[in-house]
Image (cartoon, rainbow, N blue to C red):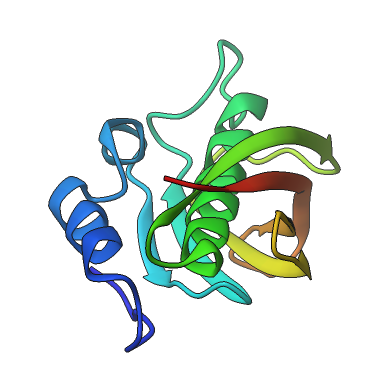
Amino acid sequence: MTLLPPDLDPELVDRLVGTGGGALCRKMGIEFLELSAERSVATMPVEGNTQVIGLLHGGAHVVLGESLGSISAAIHAGPGRYAVGIEINATHSRSITEGIVTGTCTALVLGRTLATHEIVMTDEAGRRLSTVRMTNMLRDR
């Protein structure tokens, strides 16, 4: 699947590997390349994720961003804890009609009860397409 940190919660690894990141990620063709609390990277094809006029759907940007932010926060939460998204926003800067989008998730705050990540989506030339910011609440099971 991807490059995973060696000390990752085995239950989280089983869920990630077993589901491929979840049904929506599989449907959208999201491929996780690197996962950690501090930095995660995934790709997604434009094809199959467009809106009616052929542009990558804005919601697809958010799905890629939320997938990366949620998994990164869950990794930070650690064993016996889980992450729940409580806020997300997106700014779309550039459209795209073909190719592969790369999402790079970077931790802004990794606290005991909250984790905030910024996820930047770029095209194959490295141009910023959108920026998503997500905050997760970290809870005990």
